[in-house]
Image (cartoon, rainbow, N blue to C red; front, side):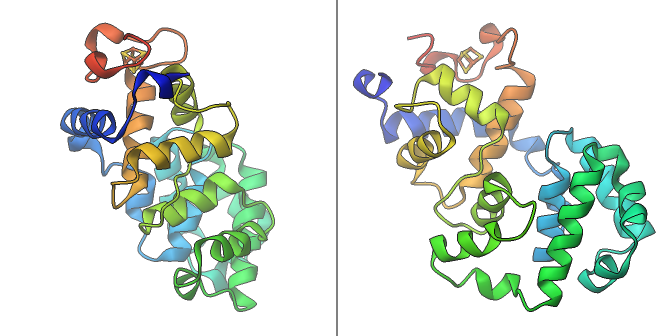
Length: 223
Ligand code: SF4
């Protein structure tokens, strides 16, 4: 395993610096950067699943303009109206139900701001109890707030497998490996965003473009 190849925080800092230098100009072009409060942030994360940032941003703006991005409004709006507004983001029926369920939970007393003061695992459990909300959504939300956790999308998982940083390919194991290596960062979501950019543009699923990769010299796959 790559742990035997000496991957450590020095390696991780080199990787972070190289990725940040390469992608920092576009690091704030994600749908989550449009959110003005924690409810909007969770909605943005839900919308961003399995779609492009551009489509997630369109859906987010549509929802805000056509329905409203307030838990009261969302809870009272017909599901079909929410679905229509976010259709462009794909999986719109499922996402509309999750967003509505989130709004209902907020109306029933779930305080997303106070939740951030709780122990990480307690906060995680509370968020996971909302119907339709999964680990990745919760972990991205908590990581954005500087918690020692990291949400993993398909790009971050594929890159971890290529780098061989984890003992198994499970979400939890890969998450632990990233946290172990990059735990020096204040905000692990920024690493996640850099990995998404790397995975979309260079370390692609079918044909990685190693010849132009900013971390080519550090890549365990290439060592
Ligand atoms: S060098 Fe190649 S395999 Fe390694 S991260 Fe870059 S694109 Fe992916």
